[in-house]
Image (tube, rainbow, N blue to C red):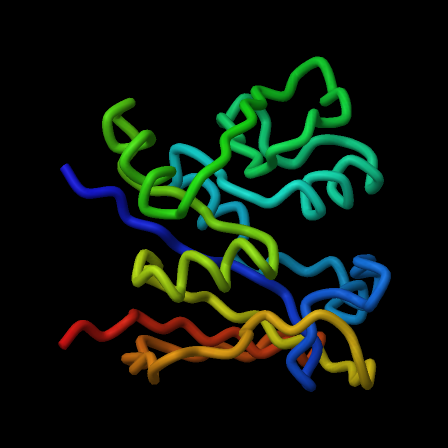
Length: 176
């Protein structure tokens, strides 16, 4: 069995997923309308994120993953999770993480957090990207995509427009 990895992310029109300080309050510009996150999260059986993203999610209050296992990539101890959270700390290269999750029976993971997404993309482990561009320019911040050693070709699946002005585009990573 091969583990599929997907990204579902909000970003500013100018391509930033967070401000320099790691906050993503600007995503509120998309309003509270549903845009497919609930449907998406129901298709994954685990979440993989970096420690910085984990800490930002904790700071938001509440827990958005229910009892879905969340694997936080960090070599340092983690802040205490909410009681309902199922958290496990992992470290290592993306291929090692995917191998561990594959051996444990996971089939579809949600990869979240800028640096983590970049590492998984560079390792060729992302299969699907769902990019939610909210109608705001923030000028600077943390980019979803970092430097690449080679082009990554995407196959456009669909684009949807929402009342708030949010534009959602879905891509598959082309192989070969």
